[in-house]
Length: 385
Image (spheres, rainbow, N blue to C red):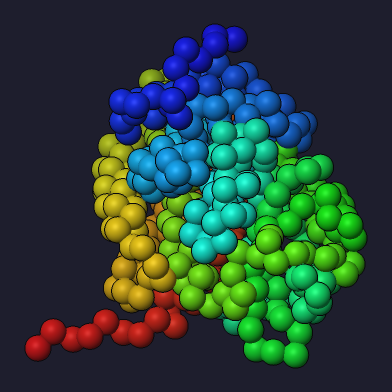
């Protein structure tokens, strides 16, 4: 495999274009040949994730003070998008890694950020999110899974998280827990290196099998104060949630881009009959371009936020962009199946994989139904007199 000659983290002239090009090189050289193994055999691509880290894929939402590029959320989404064009499983793990950097970038615990961020940014240490259950809990969908009991020097956390991705021995991941005998919550970064924390692999999925997804069992796991991101964490969650949601759109943008390419390929042979299908490549490409422009503009606006995002109109637009990404993914993946016809119905075909991946984009937390619930719960925008 070709060796990357210039690592973006060391490139003082880094631009959005050169950042995307560096990620694209890893995707072409390392990821593309392994897609089938990741998807069908469930291989976890640890080496590829490390190479993506070296290419700067996880670094753009992080300031140079902590080893990042500081290019912002637009470049972050573009990196996830570039990976997801070829493999949404790896695009999802890229997002998981990015989400953990986002938590650490936004914490006031700068000692923790200084300790963990440089290695997570470069992919030398891999990381997950662990916030599926808390995000559902804060949306009044399910009960919080973890409880934190204050003890000398920190907290003891107990409970079980059903599925956390991009995990393995020594990986870091964020968690939220309800503080016992209070109405408050905390967020922290933990690892299976902590005594009492066990990872279990107990499920097989129709897609995203090679994503290092485990159940995490906490038995009075001592989490010291120096691993706490925020306690209480209400303001902190309001700070990280919009970026958490918006960066997921990169998975959908990349998937849709590749589905349109598959449609165009199918039309080289079947265009004479495919012309009668409702969703055509040019129409979908226009919708993709509008979705990109909207998402990138929102990313730039979130970059300008230095604390908790209180702008309800901005939050509403972020949720709407994520909804649009899910719905466009489903629509375009279905169109790719229909354009390809019987060839798409062969297990392991590219359109079949894209269809399974599209359902994941719509189901991963916050799922499409949760996003619509969140949108419904937001205050109505003020009427202009």
